[in-house]
Length: 372
Image (cartoon, rainbow, N blue to C red; front, side, top):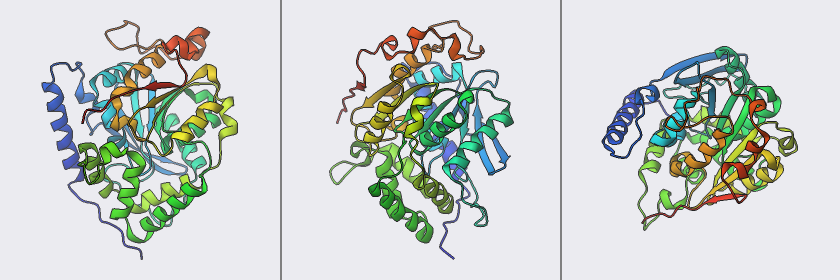
């Protein structure tokens, strides 16, 4: 039997205590936006849904009468470790929670305190993971939804949008994948897969994952200390069930190329990618194959793949303009009710172009200077 790390019983307590500390820090900020932080506490409303392809955990935040925003994280992450940077950004939080009820879907076995998935359970493919999402939507009685995913999660949501076009209003993708793995990526993932299977979430695997997520500026080096967000992510990875991560990695490493289906997407797409992301060229390739009338690319300088954690403020203005196309605004900007159903058919065609979002260049590049 391969060695498996044991889950730590105080994992939830530690994460919730860190969350409370972050809330207190935000409350002391003089320029913060007023946000009901109770609605985004890590406790949330956790649902464990039994689908035909196995159980999946969904954390729900906000008013269920509002339109739905579905999120899906990257490999070895969940909504806490992948999206908390974005949702702890007060302006982004007020924009998203004012307009949406958030449904955070975790990959099987990636939620907080997850048990090891039985070895007897069959491995799921990316198609299976996409099919799981539609069962989750049906469970909650949701129609068409907005989607936000990071890297592997972005691939799963894009595949979902291709298979179930009427269920997706728009895609917000961070460092997305769309091609089958290159030989380099396939070998990289295979090494990581073998390490996970035989040695669990060891130090080498953790370092490989951190390089996947973050730029050198925050990951640190001999001269630069590791940033707080990387240290927090490192602790989170140590608490993952390695066999569950291995299962998700096997699905992603066996993914098919979905480039051909990109032009058939009927929803608008907003893509973010850090210019230091190992998947930067993949994001450019994806953008070039999407319908240019309905898509825009934002490149974030000095940032890795996980823009939601490393540079969440860089996402705010593009998100605002993107959501304006659906008649959605930050609370102080409009009295439009967020309870109204979103319908792309109600959007004037001129609002669907990047130029209408206040963007003169395409691809768009946000230049954020780092203060060292």
